[in-house]
Length: 548
Image 1: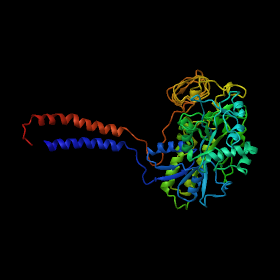
Image 2: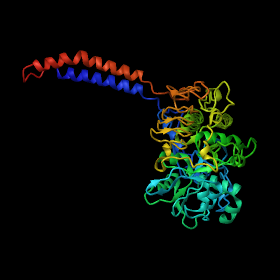
Image 3: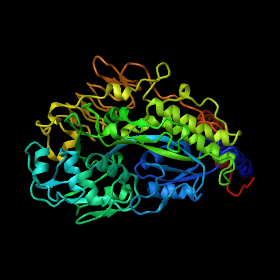
Image 4: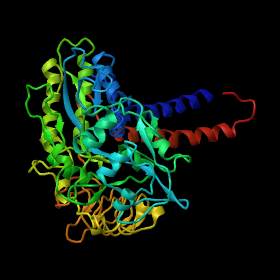
């Protein structure tokens, strides 16, 4: 009896095991291998989101956010398979004099993520966190060169339309590592405010190694900068980083004055508008092919633009004789990049980035094609715009950039000479005038980003499934009615064209299938339900001492 019972239980367990095993995604087989990359902290939140997504399907990717400068070095020394950097190789670093090349390793750049370099801060007045700070570029430059050292400075008061802050020392927080965030910010300073920046640097040009003077605090990495600003001892601090880091901590960032005379945030919409003016190097023979020139972005006259918008790049190996690469590694890299520039772009808006437009996605496809050129065994079947589920364009008219088209206009209170936009200083992210990012379920009547599911009567990004009565975000998930502004159900773009997620099967692995699991469970439960009760009944009825 006991043997029969054990046998049936074993059958049940076997059924369960078969169901579970059948439901597991096919892991990366011999056609894939683990790849490792390093570099930009500015891009890391997006990069790691994509890594987590593809990992569930069997791709193994490891990324270390060591800073753009270190990422380029790691790639050149062949200790990694790819890098991510906010700028290209410089040849020689203009500040340190260090060599900055790929050490002869053949490579190509490809754009992977767009976003805005923001200025998170902690400024508390009577214990309340100010959330509606506005700064002009000139004021920003003087803060980060030590010329403005107190929050009651007249220049800051002027930027905020006469609203003065009390006497609180400013603590600028900069990156201690070789940072792409530093490079993006200092390029802006060097281009727009050379008379302020160059005497401070002692030279012209950008730098990834921010010079530290006076009360400046240096922290390593994007997380380090943001964690310091959010710490209890950091009242009066302001730093620079990609917008994603401030959003993740629900901390405010300064609105920056654009050339149209409006103070704006680095939302995915404002970044998308700004980057329509980026000049991309289109010379395929140039070592800087696809790198950006942002001069016209800084000076764009559209009132919706965020001036410090930019792209970040993947750096991939392209030589057929690159001894660190195998077919399996190249296949993993190709599949990961395909996901990143297509389906993965749907996730970046709500976490503080902006999806790539179609021209750069097409260019990235061409660069991914170099992996196959290096190794004909790499499978790039069906890798083009027609299979790319990117939220900025559709297959019927891929030249359109939805985000730039539907980007909301800033409210009048964000214009120079008006405002600042009103609202509780302690809850600016839920500002009833709508110029913030309501991280909770706040009511927002202007242009904001209700990613926490709030009610938004203006134009914003209902990433949390909130009710949006203005121009909404096609990546937020919901059916958008352009007449009523209501957003419900599954995802659609602001023009009414459905852009719901379409699963894409990458080469060499498949999505998890629950049917085998359910089938296995059903078989196991059926065996238990039929056979186990009578056996237990017999067992209970047998006299003690009967071991049959």
